[in-house]
Amino acid sequence: MAREFAISDIHGCVKTFKKLVLKVLGLSKEDTLYLLGDYVNKGPDSKGVIDFIFNLRESGYNLKCLRGNHDQYLIDGLKYSWEEIEFLNRGGRETLKSFGVENIHQIPEKYLNFIKSLPLYFETEKYLLIHAGLNFDLDDPFKDDFSMLNIRSMEVDLTKTGNKKIIHGHVPNSYLDIENACLPDRQALTFHDNHISIDGGCVYTHIPNTNHLVALEMQSGKLYIQKNIE
View 1: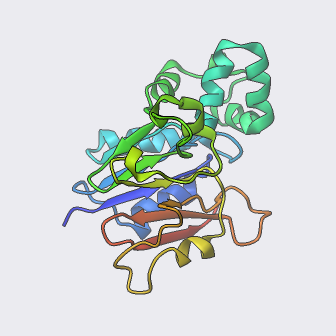
View 2: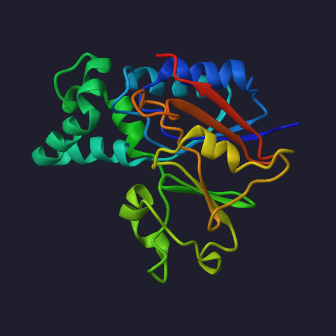
View 3: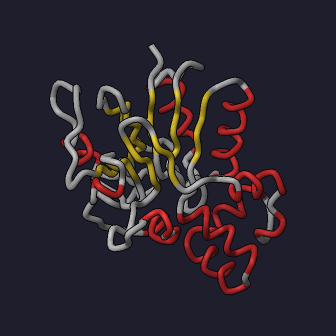
């Protein structure tokens, strides 16, 4: 049976990403894999992460990719010199190293076009998938692109989401806390204020109980967790 998975905040950790997808999930071409953004910055191989995404798609796997705030930093840095400095200060130097270039303008066009093309949210039958979340102070929270990429807390108004709960990343969580959001029988998810974060802080090897990449099987609520192996 076809499955649907969500993963967020890979941050250049390509070895961990590959092991989670190929070995732990055993992803098939009938499955759908939603990636919720932050492919670049901080980790050792941002280029490798995007190459793996390209390879999976070219091999016939069904991937749906969102934009994260770190992906946006790269886009903004292409436009403004001060934003390029901010990109570098937020882990961008590791990204440039992975591409073997000295500045973001030297990154090959196909990678830049991929990042520029990424949407800000996906909608499934039951859920909204967003990198960070929505600003429910607005009548139409989908008009606030900045919040979709950057907001760090929210009180979900289901009347503004079509009664759909939100799956997101962006704010690192203990993988133990993410595990606790799944019921012991793995048949449903426990949502706090109608949203759940699946950012296990994979790249943060210095923070206790993070340092894991998390995949959520959306139908069953089953969680798959891979420790950072970079």
